[in-house]
Each structure stands twice: as C-alpha cells, then as structure tokens.
Image 1 (cartoon, rainbow, N blue to C red):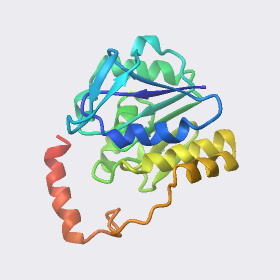
Image 2 (image 1 turned 60 degrees about the horizontal axis):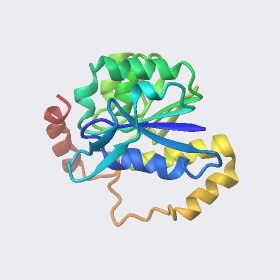
Image 3 (image 1 turned 135 degrees about the vertical axis):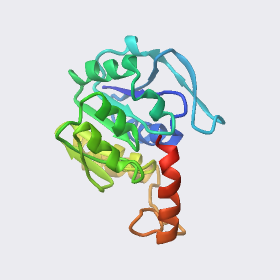
Length: 211
C-alpha cells in the first residue's frame, strides 16, 4: 500500500509527519515523500527539511494521497504541475486526504466540489470559493476524501484512516504505541474555546497571511 505524502516549499512539518507516523504503522504500508523534484524540501520555518524520495511523475498510482498545509500552500494554488498531479492520482487512489490548508489545494484541483471538507479555522471559508462546503469538524470524511482541520488534527486523520483500513485494534495499537493521549496545558485549541480577543487578533493577521 503506497502512501504518497506531498511536499512543497514552506509546508508545515506536523501536517506531513503526523499522518506519516500513524499511517506508516499499518501492515504493508510504504511511505513515499514526493515533490516536483526529488531532494530536501524545507518547512515553513526553514529550520527543517524532509527529503522527497521521488518526483511527482515517478509516483503515478498511490493508494493514499496526503496533502499537508502550510504558508507555502498559497504559492501552489495555481501550480499546474502540482494540481494536474493531484487530479491524475485521484483517479486511481483509494483515499485522497489533506491536513490543514492542504484541503485548499485539493479544492483548487476541483476535487472537493460539492463535498464537505475541513481546513485550518483561519482558512475554512476559503473552501467556498471552490465549491466545497466548509465544515468545522476535526476530521471530515466525504466518500474517499478525508480532510482534517489544523496541523495536529493530521494525527487524528491518520488514526481515522488506519481504523477504516486495518481495523479498530490496529488503530488502537498505533495510538498506544505513539502514546497519543492529549492533555494540553491550555484549553484554547479551537476558536470556540480560545479567548475571543485572541481569536480576533489572529483573524486580523490572517487577512495578510492568506493573501
């Protein structure tokens, strides 16, 4: 089972690594990091690079596609090479997935039209521009499309898929082995829970981040 995780300049690390470290535990899983060109691809801070094993044209029939988000997503929204690849591999994929603003790339490729989808809360309404229905849930499944909300929700998306593919016991084993037992020191992980002034501060900043 080949799992292709897309990389592009200024992706968010956990968006890619979270699904890799959950889906990769499945029996027979083959994780391949893919980008326009093979080689190191730097994350949004520039402090970390993940090596893309293969170029897009070398990965033509992955079973699962994972599209991470990140600030660099905005630069890819009209990248015909990347969008054409997403459309092509979606034809034969069993699951097409995204984390955070990665759903905007799926939407730009025309894959989420008329479908419910998640994204980072700051970018959620952007999905409407591409005919998708934004949904403020942590993980959204609509047919073979599985989209996750912001960053850390990629772990939940990975576990959700492991359960669907390999069964609950395997998914529970992955959760146990990764000791995924969130107990955050603050209850501010969504706009519904965070202080209202903090939410508004970041909404104001996002007008520049998303442009």
